Image (cartoon, rainbow, N blue to C red; front, side, top):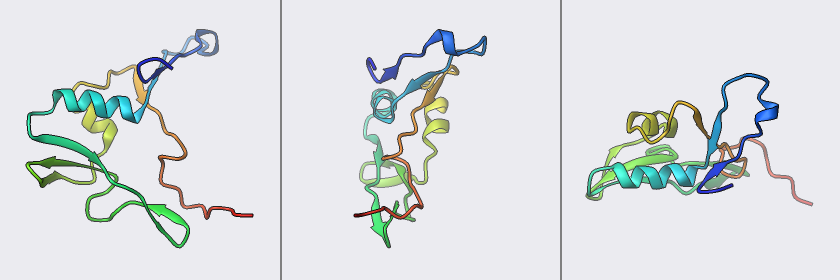
Length: 109
């Protein structure tokens, strides 16, 4: 992985358009560069409730702050990044299992 973008093996694409995987962190950095001064994209910290990882219901996983006031909540990162032209048509956001909200109960020995 280089600069938050994973390499794609062209032999495995079988003629389909090549999709580049971009990390959430790389997308957040790109957005920080293009958002107006004073506006920031923030990521909520997950909370464990009955063994499930969940995000605050009032703001969601991602939200936008403007001078300490919430401007947007429950932001869809993919749509938000495409709206601000930081995620190109051939790119997709990496869905890491540790970042994703899961409904499975964690197994402990």
